[in-house]
Image 1 (cartoon, rainbow, N blue to C red):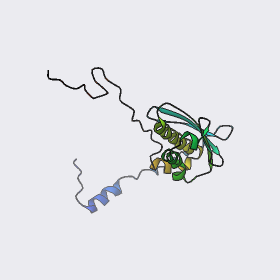
Image 2: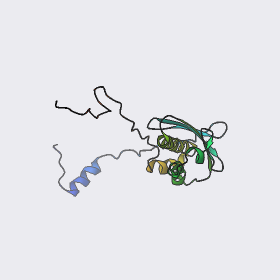
Image 3: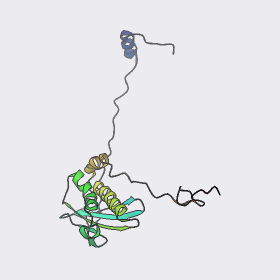
Image 4: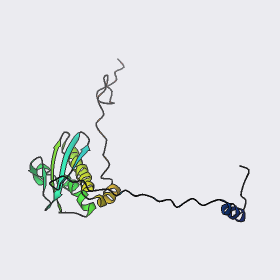
Amino acid sequence: MADQVNSLEELGQVAEGVEAPEAVVETVTLREPVRDELGRSYATGKRKDAVARVWIKPGSGKVTVNGKEMNTYFARPVLQMILAQPFTVAGVTGQFDVMATVKGGGLSGQAGAVKHGISKALQLYDPSLRGALKAAGFLTRDSRVVERKKYGKAKARKSFQFSKR
């Protein structure tokens, strides 16, 4: 580089000689709410081997999972708390009715899948909630799944007991 600038005065002189670029106009695309003709938003949530289809609509806060009340399907309080997290973070507790169908995995994975689906559906229904849900990490799919069993192994990585003789 032949034109090296050694002082602030030289930098000012160089800057005067350079034409300023035209004002850059940034176009910000605002997200549009995604709702069906019944006023619902739909999203798919996943965790481990569980897949949940979730519909939300404005209502009294009733949560139905596979045709049962949330308290019946997810009997453990920890799982009920997991389902309530997206509403608490977004600040819309008790404002939406949730209807979910979930398949695969165990109860913990299913609760995580429904939570993921609720979070995605909330941000589709009201795009202004996206920031809070994303900051809490609820829009990211937890992709950890059980590793498959390999041949010649007792489990995925565990070996059979070694016998010298």
